[in-house]
Length: 434
Ligand SMILES: Cc1ncc(COP(=O)(O)O)c(C=O)c1O
Image (tube, rainbow, N blue to C red):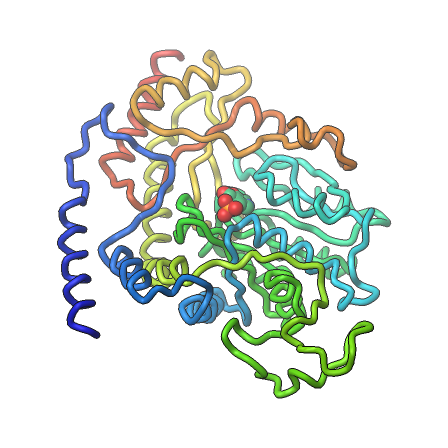
């Protein structure tokens, strides 16, 4: 390491101490965020070092992150993207590739998904001219079930794309079996659930392809960022092409002629020997992330196991503390799962003697941050009302989620003192209104 770099990193360490927030927790005054990035000195140094080296595009840190993260999740290939939403777009679009021949999805094909959740789990279905088929969720787990998915399978169904809700696994083994039995593709949106297991197996490993988000609220943070993972090498190649402008070539930027055939291809109606670097086999995007993001991701990855433990500890302390509180549906893990929780969902009983808004206002006044379960019932939003879609069964629980549910935080920056204050605040409000 150069002497100057060493000096700058030493100064960055001192700066980290200068700006650290070690103010004591003051109940009602200190903000208790529902989610956020948990960044330490090593994260700051990783960012400073990446900036000093001016690794401004995707490069070696991105490749290192991809291979370490794939190994961590037990999958063969990872492709870093600029967001979890981009990862979802790539995952869904991959199944429309001509390289899948007869199995490719075509406009009008149906994809089963969940009505209550995050919009960009569903948007890639619509963006690819496919038709979302919405099923309802269960209150408490906030996931759909294999039975609901089975009921929704029809002659045009070709795929299933579902998120593990707030870190809580859906019935991944059963839904993967349904997909296999009916020849459907399964995409697991694992953006909120890195480290969760179902039947002792990591979520993200049940489907054909899976996605992760590295936005600050998520288990690992890159500022913005996401990832598509799969063990299917043909799909991985399609994802890479779609992510990297649609090109056919798989050389890294800065690399040339890895295949030793750069000027020997003939594709489409191009002349023989047209530079493979500029042959496009998909109508693609550029959804890559930068090495600065990846440098932060690598530093965060070292802490993932600790983050997951802290999320579980905080969720359990909230769950135990609120066990006997009336008028609230408490969250519960899907049977046979061990969630790596994203948040702690609460549903106010429709016949409770208080409104969700009153409880949320009470908590927010105490600086306890709350969030809705994302969009609630997506089919009620202006963006989706006129989109072709099908609804199977009714969406009663999705409507209850829209009207009665919110969540509070479990992220690793919360400690017992804050969690206990969250518990006592909910109890105080409900106790006064019961
Ligand atoms: C389930 C789910 N999928 C996808 C996303 C999108 O991720 P990003 O914000 O990185 O685009 C989110 C975002 O929070 C999410 O919760």
